[in-house]
Image 1 (cartoon, rainbow, N blue to C red):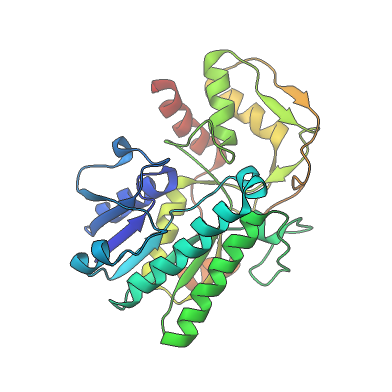
Image 2 (tube, rainbow, N blue to C red):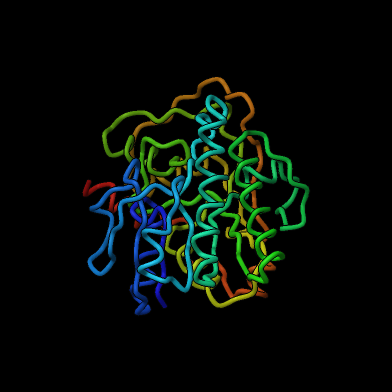
Length: 301
């Protein structure tokens, strides 16, 4: 297939690009390089420097893509609170630009959405039909992007897909980013510095390996349209995560505790039964194996 990956020079996007190239697809990357890095891209992927907030016809029309995997986004929850207009422009307007560029070629769009930021607090693994209760503009902008996909599917008979991702980790994750707790912990352990844990560390998340997430995007190219969770169905506390990071790193200093951050979720975990049944996808990388692979990359940085 001819596939465009927006945000393909970023952390998750670069894993998606590799998965597509491995199966023989023609891969084009659209990235403004504001956070993505050229060096993240493997040989075989063609980079087009462009901003998804602007019309994309000049890039997409010569390619005539059969699918657009849309991962370009504003992903920092704190930025979304401080500057919700910037967040909405990137995540909502950017998605509409992608939908319109894809529509000109009958291309399927697969959106990288978010699980935890959309569902809010989870009493049990959240299914795709669980109440959607965003606690920050970031979750709201991603939910709005999903609704645009659904509207375009109804309006134009498309079969677009939204993948609600858990807490993705793996090689090439930015240790300075809001969502990069694994990269932060492993970098601090490498440098002999204590990591900071906000609150008592009992809050839980569903950590899913980036290589597995990339395979979910590949599966979504040929499956039905709709919304699907991409996680493990398992929750790990922040304190336990740090201990398992320390095991992967072969030791390190204890973390320090800081006051909890306002609005932080206490429990977030995703149910993936629908994804397994309809896309044939399940996460296959254990947390310990994924942490070891991430540590090997962090150690070489």
